[in-house]
Length: 307
Ligand code: HPA
Image (cartoon, rainbow, N blue to C red; front, side, top):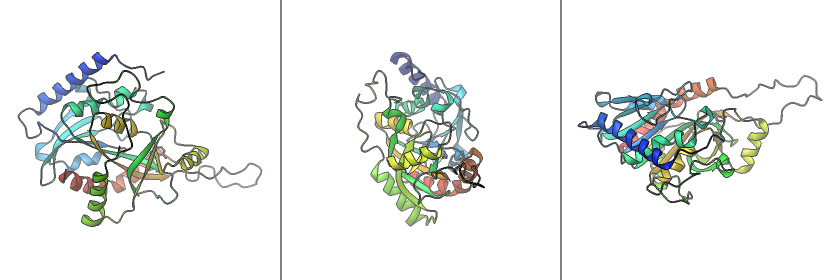
């Protein structure tokens, strides 16, 4: 099983080495005390563009102890520090996230969140690209995450499996309040009332599937029956570790494609419709993300400015 955990002491030591490496880079700048972490989802790396150019500091993952490099197209692999908005909120942006399907353990994929906690960051804004499961959702819609289903976690593939890091949080972390109500409200009022964004915005449940395959038709129906509104291959492990570390969470899915849940055409019939109709592809995900990214950037900039 690839979830074998690293001995606690070594892990904690690597977290402090990473934190020291970052602090040394930020020392004596306006960015020395970042308050907000932003995780950029597939195709949403442009979020780093809302950081004030004059003050940006970039550190590639390779230079930070314990950080793994992202192997996915659309995910680069660097931390970008900078100031956001007229209130100049210091933030740490993760451009390029790490996924379980890349072969990394959950301890490795969520390592940056632990580092964020030691850096005294108090809020995490998590973004992702996700497939629409709810039949009302269309590509290009946004979904503020109000809850999640940790499907691998329910079967034992859980980021908090193993010795509990008592210095961060409790053994039995409650998650009934995982997605902060005030932050969700701030997001919705900012997008709709302040910025007058016309794109559809929903509030819904994110279903975490380990990936890397997109779902079968039967899996889409299963996820729908279980209460998922959108499905994706990230976010949930990070949110769990953030909550365990006492960080507040705002999470956003950009719906990039609609999950296909109809039964496949029956081979008993002549001239069936093409089986690839509606089929998900990573290129489609990146294109939808690209089109929506400007709106996402505007909303996040305005929300973070209020934090
Ligand atoms: N399924 C899982 N992950 C995804 C999808 C999807 O349809 N779209 C974007 N990420």
